[in-house]
Image 1 (tube, one colour):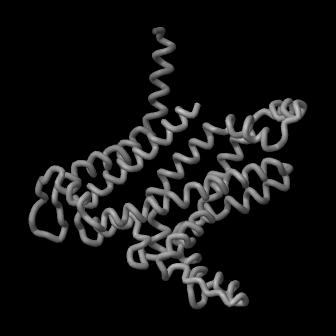
Image 2: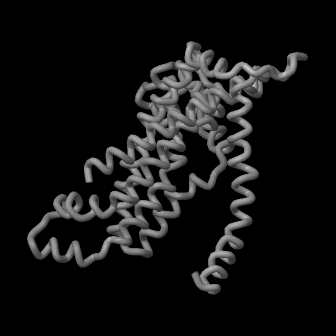
Length: 291
């Protein structure tokens, strides 16, 4: 290897150094520390020092009803939100891609705008929308004689959280998918049109195959983000009613920072990490098998 190549490698790592330092300080080291913490029984309010118990916290979590109920609520949320966001974002991206650039810019900005709002503001706003007594949605439905218990009944609570999350997060995947659509050469569509291919055939034989890498990225990132849902349920329903919307991250937060069981909370965090990793790996394998 020549001296010039060594120099290029050195300067390359030099430019990466600030990111690597921040990555190690704020992601890698906390992960390792949390893994170590999960092997200890550490209750902050107790006078007893942290005690090594090995996999005791993991066994306790896997045998606890509240853990499985929180995981079940999380899985229900993921099952509802991921198809809704991905399918909705794809439809909107296809519609915006067909519009002229000038008129499409306004709609793109309008759909992306909610993602800029913080979860605290969005949660307070939608909690008012969902209010059974003086909420905006029930005020609209009042002339029809309909009154929906948006966040006060189990059958509606999680659906209400999903509705708010779709509004809040749809803009990000839409922009990514729209960028992927813009990268598909127009010559493919022109050639297909000359051969007599209709809109549906062009979509399934040109758009979808060429958009698959971007679509996979959007799906995997949405799955990862959905498993980590916390702000929506905490701000809108507080995990109720009857713990039907208390997701796993909220239960981890309550265990670690309300009950002060840091070791047990860390163990549940790593169990959640394993679940996310398994779902992501399965998604990649399914896509590869289809290819």
